[in-house]
Length: 58
Length: 137
Figure (tube, each protein chain N blue to C red):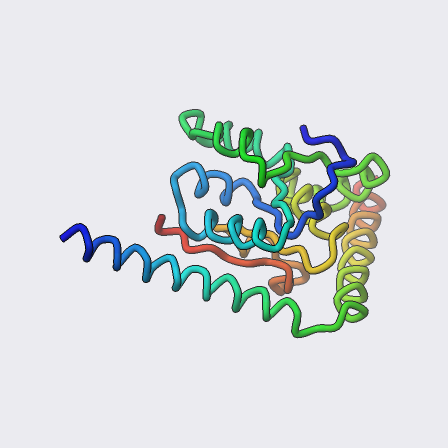
């Protein structure tokens, strides 16, 4: 019974590791340059949105 | 709070919900931490996320977060104060989300682990750096 529990827990752990490694692989589908470009574009978007919001409120 | 000159690179950010999941024993947070450690990197918990986690659940056992050598409790850098303000405005006052986003932004390929992925939508789209965790811990 304990063995079965250990086995099930081990399998769950392996599944979770595989899930996270898959997520990491997804992140690395883009090159470092593309990654940086995307993130900089997001920051520009948020900055412009916030500036427009402040102008609107003022 | 971990000194900013901590020698280990940060490869993962845990947000408020990930902190709560960690405290509840979620394998979806514990295993990524172990994988980060195997790569000789740390995870980061933004201080606003830690505070928000305790505010949401005062009974949450965050000792394991604040005393885990694989987790750095961090503040966004001083030069990012304006950036955090902008993100906080965008995220409707959620400074914890803003801090997680900004700290993740400062580290390449550094995702945010979260149980509320839709809170991070940008222009209606989920950013690439969001990793949703199973909320059924």
